[in-house]
Length: 445
Image (cartoon, rainbow, N blue to C red; front, side):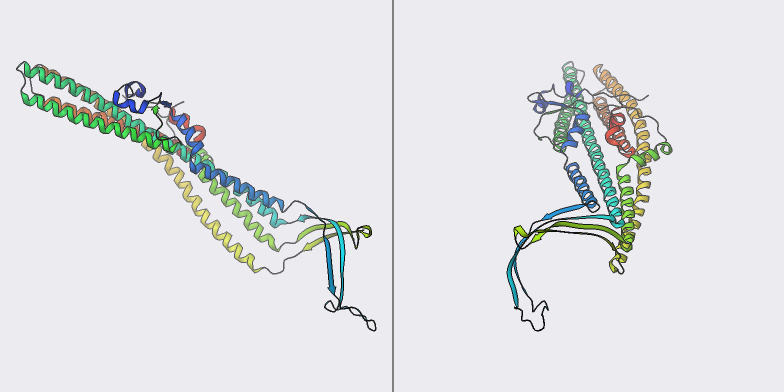
């Protein structure tokens, strides 16, 4: 039977005087959800990924502008002179000055152009939009990774505080047994060596408690730093380390959904589609382009002599020879082949992550069951050894041995619970869409 070990951190840990250092000025009760929320708001990787999405969206907007009309207005006022000789202007029999001017011109003119057919720009725009979608997937993957890391650090802190509770319970037991040894010696049932053994055991357990407390405090420092809080913030873990059964899952049934939900895998697919559009854009460099341009305005030697002029034209442009297109095509094809290999590897990786997480969950559940039985037996061994020593049947060597066995059993249960919780964290990551489903997978909601 699998035992559920609930550890009331706020009740047990922070009522002890040495631990009050962590709880000064009403410590912040931090749940796993709170820690994840804070981590998502402050993690540098998430913030950097967000700027990349904004950058990709800006590039897409610039690519779109190549297909939209452009309009500009110019109002040049020029004072100029020209060399007729340099321009090749001459009239036989009529002497002309070498230089004409200076003279002024005034002009106000609006210019407009609109691409009508430009397949290269169209495919470039589609590629940019797919790249933006890929950047959004990378952003979501960064958030999912933060959830995984914060959950792992929270779990590590839970395990360290569970060690503190176990160490404190062993100190309490050692103190009781030391008093019993002194009582037995005073009654003439035990010897001084029994008292000395009990004192040595108590000293060992007290040292283990000091070390466990230090590791627990250090785990809070790391967790606080990761979620953007001051390492000096007083934190109290609100969620206990406990066993939460996981639902049975068949890999074949969830693999398609996992592939569709994993942002790292989807990012590769969108990068692949973006390269397809880039390849089409490269092929379109030899296709004709149709553009409409025109201008309207006035020009004159003086403001009063400005006269309206205009121009409207449609241009059909053919590229006859462009050696760069071949090099570009080969470059894009090489990128496509590389991405195809990455996509195949990522697909296998998703399946491996799922199978490994489910395997670890099943194995850890068995660990928890076995550790629970071992803890019960070890506790009974301590009780029985203490009873035999109290009745004078044996010395306290049996008691010390039973205490050591209990310590190992407590460690085994904490490790088993940690393994199971860590496997559930890995499962949430493997299934994808971690931000939406972590509460259900990790917290059993």
